[in-house]
Length: 123
Image (cartoon, rainbow, N blue to C red; front, top):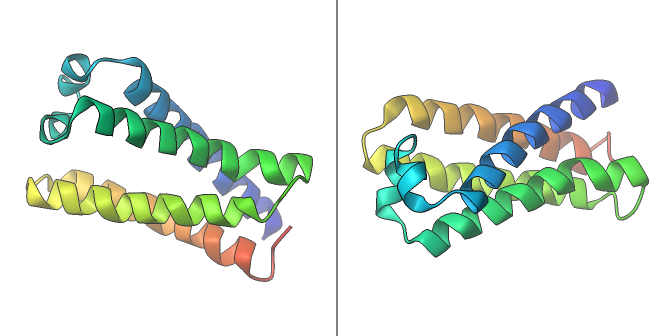
C-alpha cells in the first residue's frame, strides 16, 4: 500500500505542478483560451490558485522523500481535496459537468492519500 500511495502522490504532484506553473506563468488572457472559468476570477486569484497548486505538489513528495516534516504530505493532500471541492463548485455553477467529474476524481485520489498518510501508512 505504501508503494501505491507513493505512486499516487507522484502522479498528483506532477499534474498539479504542471497546472499550477501554467496558472502562475501565463497571463489570464492566454489561460482563457483553455480555461473558460478564469473569466470569473481576478488575475491575482488565478495566480494564488496556481501557487497553492505548486506548493501542494511540492508538499506531496518532498517531505516524505527527504524525511523532513513528513506529516506535511497528508496536509498537502488535504489542501488539494479542499481545492477540488472549490473547483467542482465553480465548474458546477458554470455547468461544466466534465470538469466537475475531473475535480471529483482528483479530489478522491487526494483523499486516498490523506487517508493513507494520516492513517496506517504515515511516514
